[in-house]
Image 1 (cartoon, rainbow, N blue to C red):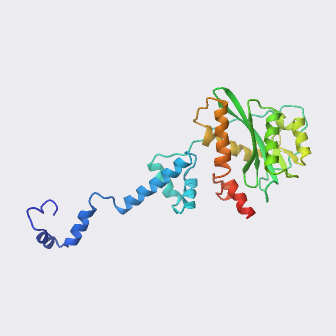
Image 2 (cartoon, helix red, strand yellow):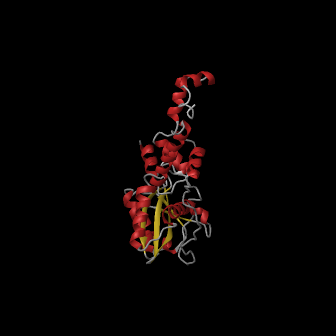
Image 3 (cartoon, rainbow, N blue to C red):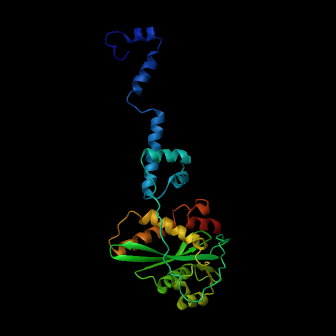
Length: 283
């Protein structure tokens, strides 16, 4: 009809083909416009893209889905995953990293009080601590963290060019002051010489903290700290080049204080960020 409208009257063609004039005009008006299904898909893809970029490529489809739920978009995981696949979006991939601390020493070690019981019923009941290493063009930087097992919040951390007892002391001291000097907290770590050092042990005793150490050669005893380092390196470090130590310090600060503690959805919290999880429980 569109091709022959100049040769034949529209009313005549409609009568012969059994069509209405209004139907023809509605069809004509839709030409060049995307279908409702295509419009919905384009909108979905745009929302997924914006959230993926907002999370700096760190979140996969389960977390993207939950972030979208939080702002009122009730897509399921498969729908979000398909959108990410169409747009060639992939969360940053994992790599394996080896341990850093040296447990071959003759200093006294503490008993394993934690016994792989990573659950906690309140904040400041159980903390875990560990050290990892990060590369820059200027050389290594070492990061020590203290994590509260109740919410998985990083409550203390410190960085240094050297992997000494001072590093873990600074991380623990920052946790103590950030959490307003709680007493009786189990502080679990591996058997590294830094954690067995006299000054570190003195700090624990000074503030009434209970020292716990992993069994010899058992990395699973400190699995929560290892999981955090895995997330940090996959989501913020791997694939990036850090020219200076200062630049990696800024990146770690942004990841811990801005993203991980405040906005990253943590599976052990029912996909709620550590800060929000503590706020909800307190409320």
